[in-house]
Amino acid sequence: MGGYNQYASIGHEAVWGTEVARTDFHRAYDDSVITPNVPRDPVEYLGHRDPDLTFDKLESAGGTLTIPLTYNNGIELLMYYALGQYLLTGGGPPHPHVFTVDNTPYSRAATPLIGLSYELNYQLPETAFEAMLMTGGRIQTASGSIVAGEEAKATFELVGKQAIVEPLTGTPTFPDYAGNDTVKWSQVTMKIDTVATTIYNIDWSLANNLKVDRGILGSAFIAEPRAQGRRTITGSLSKEYANKDILNDWIGGTIAELEATATGPGNFKIVYLWKRVQYTGESPKLAEAEEQEQTCPWMALRDATDTAMKVTITNEDAAPFTP
Image 1 (cartoon, rainbow, N blue to C red):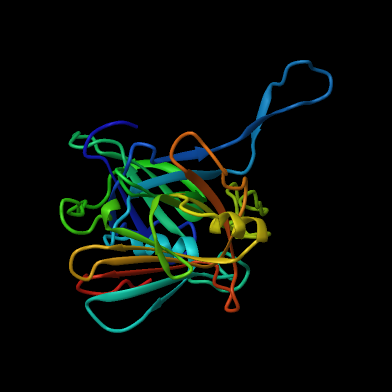
Image 2: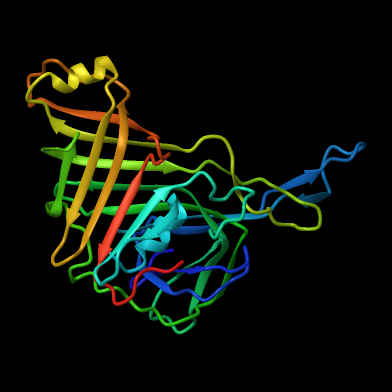
């Protein structure tokens, strides 16, 4: 699926699996893809060594969307579907959008997280426009990374009802990524337990653990993917160790608070907050010949209000995000 001027677009469905017009347009990185899944097995009757028939199993779709990490331009809808709960605080502009993890998204309970129509065009400016479209998309995993000297990115893994090839629809409205709306690594600061600290990079990953292979009689497609088991939120950060404080925290199992803040021009801001994390994996190295840099893997835990992760996105859009 190569090509230049390629873009992705997203729409919020009213009925799961029913295509809607795409309203949010994103420039996508080259690992973005939509894949139809049509598993097909042979029919193995007795009396023959070789099958002469096949049957289709449950049809579904998978997809990946990797985009620049931005302060606006549709990042709100993706964060809403990844975390599950949204609250607009205050008027504006500027608009502070608060997203938190929720126990009900994609469950049997009524939820506004219905599904996403996700379109990825093949190539422009070809005359025969074609695009791959996923309907019924729900976010299985979401992740982000901010590394000194590199582009800040966000990646979303989606599962959905089906993927089809169709004529390109809609006119793309490309975000002006040359402006103030992309997050730059030089704009990011970090706090551990409310104390500013110097780090080299931070990444995070959220896994919603959706059950995909749900079949119902009367349909060739999967039923709506639903939450099962536990959600996990993990990450890592790399920093230079100036003393043994974090080593002692590691050994003692101390609970820490992590906060990463990206502050752009004007009122642009994104704040990632994990109120309670514990370091996991290997302990920090005590001595090395080179610089004392150590990667700290961690796992987020829920707090008293069941908020293991909170993302606050403030931007200067004329109107706030509305699901």
